[in-house]
Amino acid sequence: MERKLKYYNSVVDGNGCIYSCDMLRLKFHIGNHIAQTFLNYINRLEFAFNFRMEYHKSRTLKIGSYRHLFTCKYDDFTFVIGCGLILADNTNGMDCFIEFNPNKCEMSYMMMILDRISVFLHPINNEYFRLIRWDLAVDLPFPRSDVVLVKEGKRAYCKQISNSVTEYLGARNTSGFVKLYDKTVESDLYYDLTRLEITFDSFDNLKLPSVCVLGEYDDDLFELNSTDKVLLRLLRTVDYETQQQYLKELGRVKRQKLKDYLFPRETKLVYNYFCIDIVILGIKEILCVERDNHLRFGILGDIEKKVREGVPDDEIFEQYSLFG
Image (cartoon, rainbow, N blue to C red):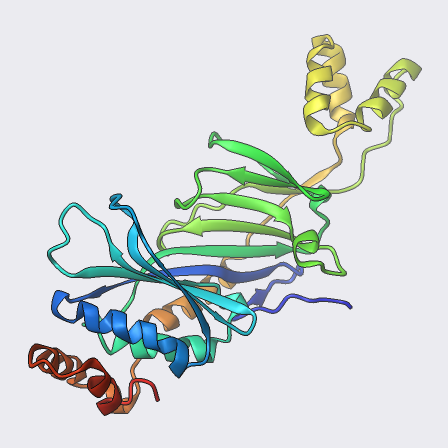
């Protein structure tokens, strides 16, 4: 069966490159006095919105981990809610996050979940959620073997996955981390597609990696003698690391002469910043999720009051139609 990728809010440039957001992690904060009520609400979402939930309670008190993790699955997409970030001082409430891939979820459904969670939040500058991290995905219509990630001083490493190589640049889960891999193999597609993913923690000063797309070899070999031509053909049959090792064993003049012919002509990827801006606008719309009219004003204060009065959580949820 032929498979194609689906996207949310993707933009295609004139060269056939597809820009989208492939991961979004948002932070929110719950006040101390309604923290348990919120946890009870999340536990009940599974039944109210018809998804499968796996709950994990942390057994460690390691700083930076979360006490409660809810992995929620609906149809073919997954989102994760983490509650209770463990800090040196946890007296000011409960820090939480929600993480999902906009390309792999039904956004109308996801917006409904965010809408309900926002009932328990105080907005800051009209935002109920704060961006922690997001991944920009750039899908290139080329085979993985034709795309090269240029190393620029960051920690770089490769990993062999199936029949293709995945390249990494930088430290995982930090801004500036880069991953270049074969999307055709990963998603079992019938067409060539190489994905470039870059992690950011904001929308400002986006530093994009240098990427080259290889073209045809330059086979105008009139400057090479017969021995050099044989060496060149042999070097082209081995992987990049082996090529570099063999080249080091040659003299400087011979090495430079062969290097000029060894690699295909390349074109540097030119990013389309207009497309990136459209992707960012889509994320900002998610950040500024607005509550339904019947939920918008005063509800959080009422919920806080009822919790203090000892009203059962289920009565609170039913009164404000939080499962409707």
